[in-house]
Image 1 (cartoon, rainbow, N blue to C red):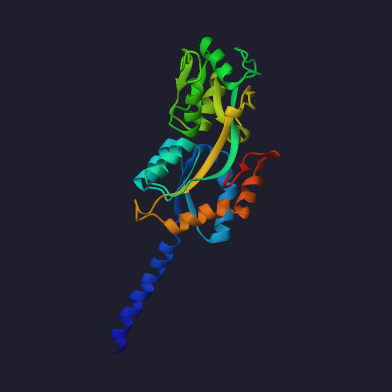
Image 2 (cartoon, rainbow, N blue to C red):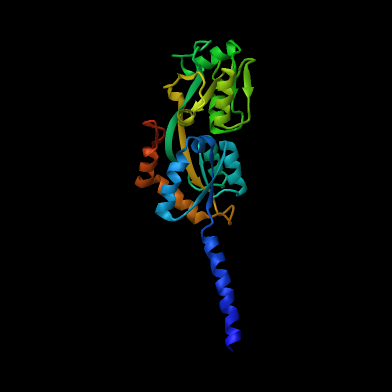
Length: 269
């Protein structure tokens, strides 16, 4: 009889570590390269895990690719910056409610000599000068939120989308695009957060900023478990709720590089 009882107890003992491991499986967050490369998540996610016990694995991609991950059910939560694409994702039933979470802005950087004299212009005037002069311009070309914003600006040109012969797409993240621009003395559109954390600037400088069209809004949304029952919906919602809470928003606001705030919380705005 004692031997018979030992087997179930042994099986239970083997199952307990497995159950504990499953309970600790992190949620997958598909996000932008800008939030990752700026260092924000290294600051934000430990605070979230400490508050909730939930771990997060970040997959940093362009926003378009991040949203595709959510559409396939390969991510539990999205942290991205293309409001039109985010709202379409929700309307199609792949995501739960989309929330504004924080913002910063885009800036146009280029060589300090500014050969086509973009400094002081608005973003459309600056791109027009770049195109007309066939100046070197590096585009991410990766369907990211930054790339989507850049394409919106090109469409405002007269004539629309006349980018000039110096236009190059790298199909890469923001850090790589900045490296290419630094090496080639080219112009490039970047989010301010990645720019502030970027160390290999060579002679690149911020040339165009402050145009209201350069506003860069980030959104957060959980993937809909009705579409993908396997997603970790409860833990994903914990992240959404926490980052929108006063505690989470305070952590976003506290992140700085060299005393400069990179992101500004605006939950629910």
